Image (cartoon, rainbow, N blue to C red; front, side, top):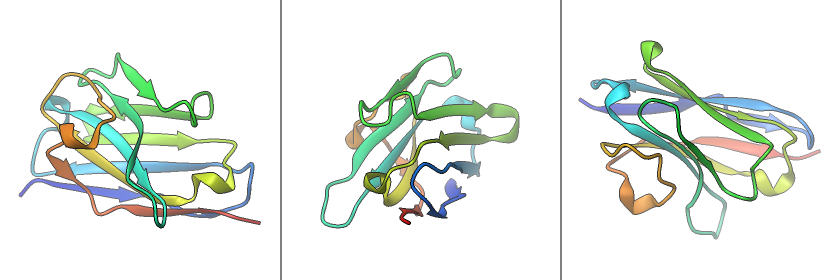
Length: 124
């Protein structure tokens, strides 16, 4: 059974850092491009970052550029999202998703498989 599991969320003060992980089971992650998305209360789910199958291509939302870094370790079947200089506006549930395409799109409708999400709260 194909499954994505996010971890690494939590409560952090503004300016702090977190690293999210997206672990895949039941399939080989290197065959999929991966995206990270987030959804804040009362808002639509939005794309945060995407990474290509090989890891050579990455995309970022303007709101997180230069603060977040996406990476993947295909040997560990895991994708990461390093989040630095966190702001209260980054508070949301963060989801990872997988698609068979080559490009790490940030459009929700491009993705076939989704994890359950991990909560990130940025507050003093």
